[in-house]
Length: 106
Picture (spheres, rainbow, N blue to C red):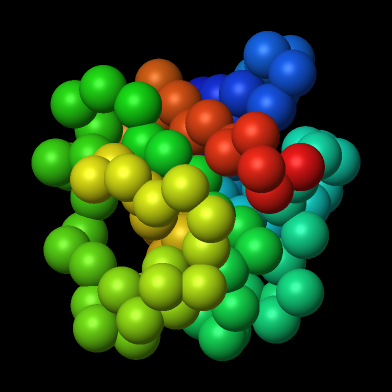
């Protein structure tokens, strides 16, 4: 298990012990994080799990693939640290990962 945090649009923190190998999106759904709808179920076919990756963790994530980049075109308020949480695989070296849910997504 790896400790990660989601910050909802209203500032509420969701500290989660996430199973290694699972996606950040799966953990958000299991823990009722508002604003992470995951309409496509994690198939990288929508942008309803859009998050901002806080701090240096953005550089630790696997590089964004073209499909994720294309889906982010449908998200609101995209930033340089935007990712789809369905594409973030949890692993021990991501301990302390903080993901913020965009306000306009909530």
